[in-house]
Structure formats: C-alpha cells, structure tokens
Length: 426
Image 1: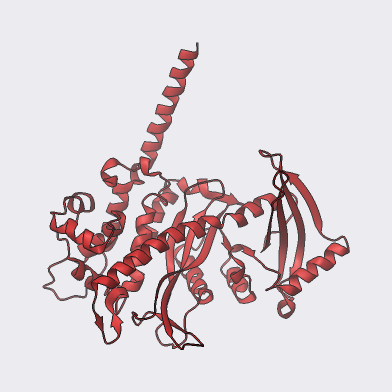
Image 2 (image 1 turned 135 degrees about the vertical axis):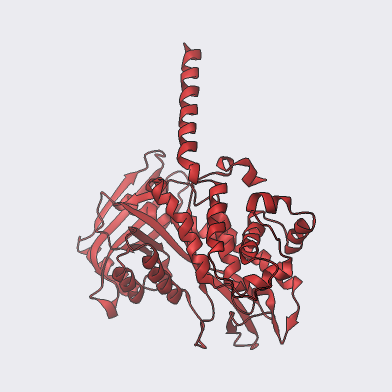
C-alpha cells in the first residue's frame, strides 16, 4: 500500500513539474537573454558608421560579464581571447569587444535606454500570472526601496561623482550611490528587482544628489512605466518625512515607513499621551509555530506626523517581539496609510520587517559592483586627476544596471538556479 502511495506522489510531482515547465516557457534564461538582445538592438548607435563592434554586442558583453561572474575584467577578456564559445553560443555575441572597447562603448550609452530592458523582462511576469504569487496585502505588491553606496575614493573620480569634504583634514572623498528597488514578499525567497535610480551629480547643479531626490525621480518614473500597478512602498526611517509622504500620495502609492523617536519626537509624544488616556489599542499574540515567541502591539490611527505638518495624518504601529526562552526583545515602529487594527497589524509588521530582503540583496550586488569598480580602476590610467573607472559619461550608471539585469535572471523570473536550463548556467 505504501509503495502505491509513493508511486501516486511521484506521478503528481512529475505532473506539477511538467506544468511548471509549460508555464515558464517564456520565463527562463534563454527567454531573458533573447528579450535583452532584442531591446539592445533597438538602442540607437550614434558612433561612426565604421565601428567594428555592434552596439548590441557590446551591451550583451557587458551583461555577460556580470552574468558569468568572472573574478576580474581581465579574466573576462581572457575568455574572449580563448575563443569566447559561451559568449557566442549563450549570448549570441558575434563580435566580442576587448575590455577597453567595451568600456568606451558603454560609456556612451544613455542609461534611460537600459531602463526599457527592465520593463521588457517584467512584462512576461504579468502575462504569465507569476506576479500574482507576490501579492502581499489588499491586492498590492510590497515594494522595498533602499539607498546604497557602490563607489568611494579619495583620489579617483569622474564627473558623475559626488563629493564630501573632511572638516578637519579638508580631504575630498568622491562617491557614488544608487536607490535599489525590489518587489518582495515576506513568505517568498524570490525578489523582483526594478531598475535602480542612480544617486550622482546631476546636470546643471553643483549640489550633491541625495536619496530623497532620487526617490522622487524613481517614483515618478515608476508611475510612467507602471501607472496602474498597486504597490506598498516599504522604506526605512529616512523616508518618513512630509515631502516624501506627499509624493507617495500624489502617485497613489501606499506606504509602510520606519520611524524613530529621535527623528519624530512630536509623533511619539502624541502616541504616549494617547496611551495614558487609554486611546491606543494594545494586545499580545502568541506565535503560531513557536509558543515561546510573543508578538506585542500598540496601535493608534490618525496621528499627526510632526508639529510642522499636523494636517498630514498617519497611522502608527509599535511592535515588540519577546522571546520568553532567551529574554530577547526586538522593537520596531512604523507609520502607514492603512488603518491599523488587530486584524491587519501582524501582516503590516511582517511587511515592515521584510526590509531585510532589499537590504541584503543590494548588499550582495553592492559588493560585486565595488569589486568591479576596483578592477576597472586598476585597468585605467588617470587623466587630469580623473579616471575612466566610472567613465566620463554614463559608465557609472550602466555598469550597476547591467549587474541588476544579471540578478533578474534567477530572482525576477521566480526561479531558483536549478530551474534555469543547464545551458544558461554553464
């Protein structure tokens, strides 16, 4: 009898896997590469007509460089010199550029052209209904935003670099950052990266760019590309300010934002006063799987954000996780535009705590970008105090975006590495 049950289970697994393969016909590594190549073909090439390396081959080489994870730019060039079999067979690259040629070509490509590639690989997720698995709350997807730095130097820099001066030594540090974005779900391992917004020196201004301005540009572009996508923006305490919240409201975006007492003294005092008057909702929930874990909540709706913006009302959720075995207590506080209650407090908490998914993924990508930037610096010579390591035009933007597109291969398509066809993993 047990043998028959085992056969039935195995048969069901085979059917499920066959169904998964059928559904993912357009959601695999080959489809991703084909989509990117078609997009790169559509990018206008403003170089001289006698260019030996087509622009599409240079862009696909940049994507392949990150996708294959060679330890250095030199190693990638050695792959090319060895014949570049994988580059031609897997990525369809006919004329593989040298390392210097690839850098020079990519430096002249508009970053806006690469944005479209992200939209191209996002669209099949919607058509294939795989995006439905990422629905988090009230029919909305959870969109995590987080700023991260990927370059810093006291000597090498390009026109894109921002600057900060040490007040004691007057030493100048040149740096670059980006605002990473990804659709996540607390209960799923996959994340769906969106096109990052670069934080760098903007044309026509001498002031440094910042995460707040980048976020404003990002959500405006997000709504142009995905005007009806229902989203909940999930950010840290740096974002819980009135101008940013009003921007989110303008673009019809829900939010879960971290708050800290040091930055929102008025808000926390308001909540404390309400608690003394018995106006807050407070309750404890025992964890369903771990009885020694207790989830403690304090909720209050219709709270003024701060003294200067008392007309801007938010809903407050305070959370403690208590481990009765170890005595360890974790403490978090958020504001949201959702009316908070006993029914949805746990879900909002899980959304707020899912920030680790954007913090860990960009961390890994940031390390890779920094590694590659260091390698690029080593291979460039300085010219008038600057270096081509991050380019004179657009290389500083294009390298991180190609890296994020590489990440899409396993994460955005909702696949583990094992699900990607073998040819795409060699």
